[in-house]
View 1 (cartoon, rainbow, N blue to C red):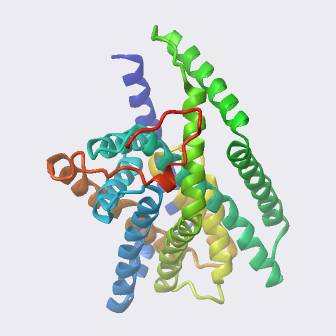
View 2: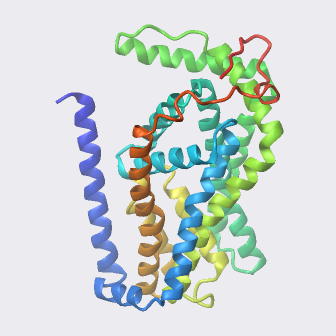
View 3: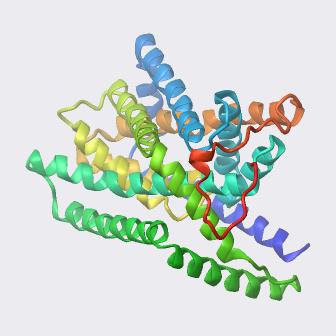
Length: 359
């Protein structure tokens, strides 16, 4: 067995063991299986219908983020890409990295160049992280206006604010000064070359030109689409939160027990916890963070556990099932091959020191 294969097996075993321990801990500490099932069975058909509609809408929302960030990509293509990569990210150890690789494969098969794919991956990643870091700050501000910020929440929000400011600062420097972007490319190239030497591969070159060219394209994309990118990303994040809120209310966690702003705070901080990919899709870790936070906020144990499990079925397991189907469709469909249109001139905005290409 190769070292890479051994590492993958070890990651899988550790993930399964951790998830099993978290499940055991949740049902031992918070509520019994029978109590949780009683809460779920008590949901009305109308509540189940509203939950299903919210979950379906949540599936749709990220398609539009990808369309905005990938000029020339159609909505059906964005649907296949998003659902397939989400399924991989949720189901496979180190799934985030595997999903990025699948993104390059899928977009490449449709005629999108590596640079255009990188543009989409990086820009959507930046906007998603901005929102993840910004939501706890927003939640804290709302709670403060309601008179219940809490010392721990203030500290966590200040940490999130510092991280958000740092991330925006680095991004702004890369876009503001071409020299900074070129130096970033040189440093990244040296690191990549050092890693490649370990596996006896030739060093990379020209990363300074690649980064400055990418910078030009980011400037073009952000200049023309930053409003649409921000709005669609915000809708995607809020939609995920709304599914959780509806699940809580359907399972009997009332606004007097846990207000919508408290739910938003717990949701936002739980997403920060999963920034480090301990398990695929944060399975187990997300559930524990949400259950602990919502029960501490005042929710009944059995109702909270039931709501979180319903929420995760709709936002974690459902995308895996849908993504399996879209992946098969991508493998069999040939009509989209090499169909990518050229990047519009007003969005390309390449550096004057870099060459241009059609895609």
